[in-house]
Image (cartoon, rainbow over all chains, first blue to last red; front, side, top):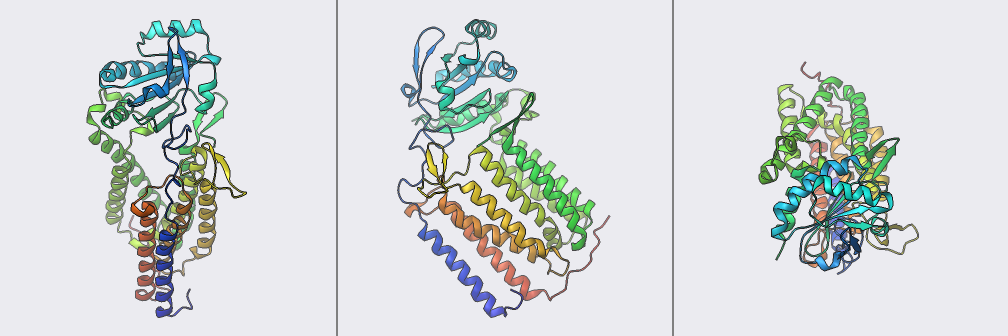
Length: 185
Length: 252
């Protein structure tokens, strides 16, 4: 570039700018080329993978039935210290926002837990939101590699944010829940 | 995709770890080359430190200002949770702190930006690895032989494209770290190269913000940055005579 004369350089730069603009136009996305919301995957921008699980009370919970409501799916186990630490915050947020349509599903990693420990845990923390028991299928569908993992799902069934690890800050939980509730029709 | 790294009992979040590692490596590299630009390594380190600390504080304060009702306890205000940060506020605070520190220490703009370029370039590399770890910034579906299985489809490995492009940028700029390069040119070249490859790679992303006509908003931003960087390069070539880099010792 050092050998270029100023006029040559300016012409070269102008060509680069025009080529860049042409690339923007040529690479415009076709309808459907951008994946968001079309297929299920455990990532922000994708449809939340559906699951049907039984709660500890024996009731069936199907995620797809909750379409139209904001949902927080939290994967946890009773032996996991950060899961224990964040449960009171989840309970407080549930108590405050359930009347505004929020659903919290605290999916227990039952394949890595024991039912007696889960029952003791629920009693200890006085948890009143649904606790579906997952033998492993939901964890696989959500590619959960670390507990706790929390998925914020919009009323349209699309994942808005994934928080891996914990304990999740109550302020983060509240701010994201308020955003989801504001999206409700 | 490897969002967490299991080191014994420790379960570390890989994406932010890559960014932190890149900042540390980039800053070490920048400190090493700063004296060639007439900037003391210590002053440069202090500038970056002030910007980082102010950025984090600004990002937290910005988040609190935007979500005041979410904070019900003081503990959340000082929580280490990185989700409680507002990026635009953090960037504004970091830039302001860097500007004030630079003014007080009378740091010359272009040599300082040149000295910081290794940090910027390595950070771009870290962002690529961070996105590869988290699976963010994913590509469009494709049947190309080098496609990867990600989020339920065969996709362009856009994170790998970013890593390769950032590596190439580092290699292209490294011989230019000599003191004879005109002030500001190194930084402007970095900006032009980075905007250029982003403009190209963004065409293969599957998470773009679409404008009417299918235009990608992020590509238009990259094009504007490229245009600005090329205008800057041209002005620097025209206005500053060759070998004008002064050995300016920054103020103590």
